[in-house]
Image (tube, rainbow, N blue to C red; front, side):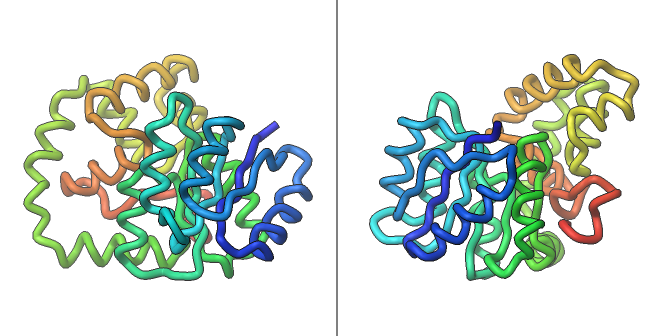
Length: 229
């Protein structure tokens, strides 16, 4: 059972999302918060697996709240779900540790799919969010490229293979299948990769690969590319 928390300052939005998540038998809503500070408190108390996080909220905004949640002993996966597709929100949310970025006009079925995707170790981006990341890649000088390349160079050849598939959005199971490894071995490799690269999650690792000039943006597995990249 996937334990979910909803964070939004609009009570009607929280109600609608709660009803949506309740329609999936594999998801249970364990908490609802009206702002980032309350989200931090409730996440510590209820240890959700996935958080649907709004951006613009009183007291503590969504981007700051993501950073707080990622610092918890058992950090949840976070999907930013907002009305605003401003470019800075997309990059800042992912850099803060979000595993996905969706707009509130996303089809309900896609929101449910996103919850399952991030739990499987993948990422999910609204097409507009993906375009913002690609535009940023093409139009930014990226002085951090050499730093990113140096960090990736510390990985072993096998870890680099795993990172390459991870950056393409592959799940642990898909990486194991592609490289002929056990899934438990892939999990161990991913853990070491995140530690070596000094990043908090798979999306940040994919962003680092992009910064190194090896990818444009965190992607979803090829079979899902059209709808969620």
